[in-house]
Amino acid sequence: MIRLERGKMDLPIDDEELKRLVWWTSHMMGEEELHSKLKLVHEVREANPDGPYKKILREEHGMVI
Image (cartoon, rainbow, N blue to C red):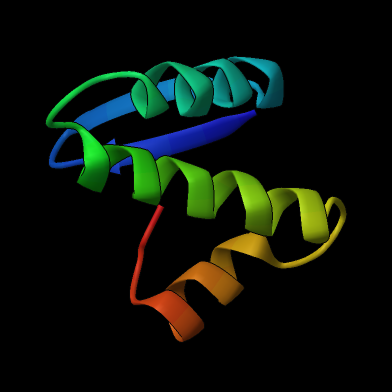
């Protein structure tokens, strides 16, 4: 399960839901930035299923989740 945090909001989603969100945002006009962020999280998690995906996103991409 992933917790995406923005301010005080937690959004618990699993990998399958994340995959669907990536697909969905790829088909939405004007959501390119959201799509690229979700896609990056998805790709890093897939490449590091048991690894430090949060650390990689933070240190290599400046993204805190």
